Length: 367
Image (cartoon, rainbow, N blue to C red):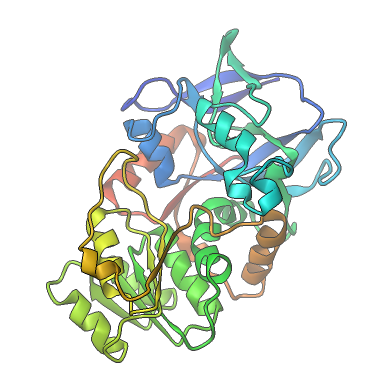
């Protein structure tokens, strides 16, 4: 089949809207007609070359739509079902999957960086030449093909443009506070960086029953937004007395949990300096994989627990329907995450907004 997609042909060049081809489905493939696809900063990292992937490639990994067709061995979703795509499909039986670490699934880790599906092959082409998948999704298009474990059914009453956000930013942030660590009611949290992931970490802390949520960001407008999403206080993370302000709010000790989502060396340092002795730091942000990040050795003392979380300890078949239900029950803010809805042909303007830093989420909506 042939369909339109936003293709990255060269680093630091605009995406091109092109017609591409999809091969016949393999036994465990699911074909999804994409109705909404969120633009994520990770996509921009590929465009800018700081995250290396083979080209040409169709970006996008926050997708939601309707199942159009399934391979002969698919049993967990059916044609007509509304689904959110997971960018971390897993085989279920490798070394890491059997140890309940699907984020480290070996076929995913082996083939995803090469722009392939879990079986090490692509289903995409253009004029007979090879095309690459991004994070086993490639949702900036009219259609995508994903493995069965990457197509997660959700209630039909959640709109696609909100449902797609669950697939990355919402799961990563909310899951950090509710799945990766399990905050107890009344505990305190600091969230550093109030973009899409940080705002959802705030929501996760709120859902977990945090007694105090502090937001830190360099941007005053983002600090105001953080308060709307559930933060009780906000501080300028770049202020000379930022740590003193945070400690004053937390009885002089520091917060029980710090969620770093700014993706900056200074934010990583602030996280370990600010957390209380015996507290927990969760790194959600990221810098270039080859960049060194330094810490003051003393800041690591005091039995602090430091972990990295890429996807909020997601178990998509458990968590995506749960998040959708939270939204439908009025307990999870998704509408407010969407800054602008755009057509596929406007996708480059959406990435321009991400570069400027004046958006939370741009969402491509297909008719």
